[in-house]
Image (cartoon, rainbow, N blue to C red):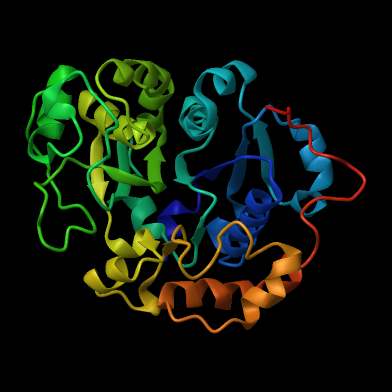
Length: 333
């Protein structure tokens, strides 16, 4: 199944704020990953924590993480002060490979539910490569001094952005993952940040250029989607091979996405449970809400898979995320 990856050092990186909701998601993520065994049981899990958190205290509060090959990493204060939650998300790339051969970027509201070795194999190369699933739709832009970059100019957005960064336009283009009516022009590899795979060679470029892009994009466009756009632009600028993954590698709990890509529960590899119309991602794994979540009758098949997995992991999830004796160190805004 994943024999060619047995000697590779694989790492999973998840960004969070130090809140009970986020930490409960991290616990679910780690338990779900370890249950897959093999390379997933041995892989390093790095939890990237923003908000000026004292990670030593956080480690003490989360005794479940001891002996798990899991590390808590604080975002540098100056990075968080300047970039906020975007700094937390981007620090996954700024850290560099640090000994890992293949690095998987995940969001806290995602979970690995099946073997992802085919995606890992795509970047198992000495040449710089990344892999991810196309985002649902074009990025929303709050404002821009450049007419073609303003929100709604979807046909001209990516060519204009490439021009702004001095990158030749053309090449590999894809449909957005929720473009049912083909309402948007095809786009370059613009991956949803909930699951993106990098090899060491690719990550070296992002370590050098992620903060540069975070500063540079602001002169062209004000957008919340800077980290995702940055992955696209840095890949294009450095001619990094970008592999587009099918929907089962970032299956959102969005019925339209599920139906449009003709998914079935047994096909799912990665679930991104970001939609809150049926579940509350920040509460469902908290000990005080877990039993209620497990007992609910859910209609969304993706949410049903999450619920079923949580039931399997119930004993590991039912304890408090934080000990009662230690308080989290988070400054008051």
